[in-house]
Amino acid sequence: MDPELNAVFKLPFEEQEKFFRGKINIPTLKWNDLVKDQHAKGFMVAGAYRDDILSDFREAVGSAIEKGTTLEEFQNSFDEIVKRHGWTYNGSRNWRSEIIFSTNIRTSYAAGRWAQLTDPDQLKIMPYLTYRHGDSRVPRPTHLEWDGVTLPHDDPWWDTHYVPNGWGCKCRVTGATRKDYEKAKAAGKGTAPPSPIDPETGAPAGIDKGWDYNVGKAAFGKSWVKETGKMKELGPWRKEQYPFLPKQLKGELPAVDLGDICKTESQLRKAVPEGIYPDVTGEPVNVTQAIADHILENKKRWDGRERYFPLIPDVISHAQEVWVGFIQAVNSGRVYLRRRYVKAYQYEKGRVAGVIADAVKGQIMAFDMIRSKDMSGGRLRSGRLIYPTK
Image (cartoon, rainbow, N blue to C red):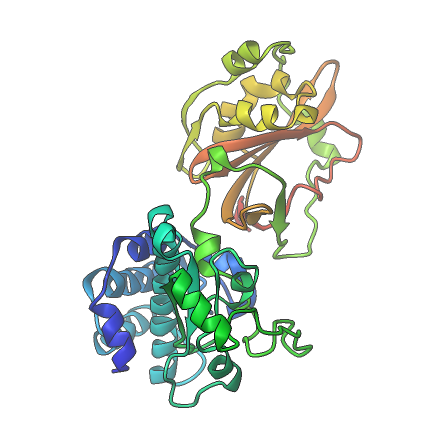
């Protein structure tokens, strides 16, 4: 067994376990169905497109992280899972099992270390980070060149060069003091190295395709309630457009009465239908004041959408569609797995509105609607359609 991986198993820690537990199982066909930051929130095994197979792999990897399972023990579980489900895969048994094992171990360890290295108390003592090459059998020349580079913890270089930086990369990052930083500067290692983009990978030279992101920053950051600033879509995963509201369904849509327009913050908060509601797939969804916070964060959102608040429980429990996709907070860089609930209604003399409720970690955090003649909903329907299943 790889000595460094063995050392990792001797050092289980809460942040690493928390990172892995926070992932959501995402069935995929290819390794790049999830890209960059999405891997910080989604657990995948390329080609494992069934929930039962993915769940078994998730349990085996989780055991390695939390209990110190060795590679050899994981390979025994790998063989059992393959046999039990009749799963076929690309590559040899040893190569494929080691890739699944080492990639998840190293990324979860790196994410946990980021949480430790950027802890406010830690930063008081060691406000700098140092890149350390990890004694690979076949060293990457650029990774060797980066060995000893010491920069402030918030230097943008870490956004793309935080470890691991590719398949099998064993490099690591350690904390550094002001004195360490001064020594690095004297040795010519106190500034960020040039990072030209490799046209073949789209990533900085020396980093494998899809690995130019900070797994720790994507995983650990501000909570949603405290998150501010613009969110951006990381997708869509598919280009197909789905007909949101076929004309023949218009007469079958539920007719509803809307609530009142709120003129004060107090009225807005009282209008939120707080509670826990089962969604159309049976998952519990919590409705809290985060919806009001979302509107108050940007007054342009206070546009009358609060009239639709009474519909939120129904949108969750009787959604016509449920989409899963990734979004990223521009300011913090943190990535979220979002569930989007969609349903269309008739209101006010047969007018139609498409209502959308977004949930992150089981909590509704944003709310919107489409009130226009174009009911395709293409602008809001990104990600993967998980309900209804096709």
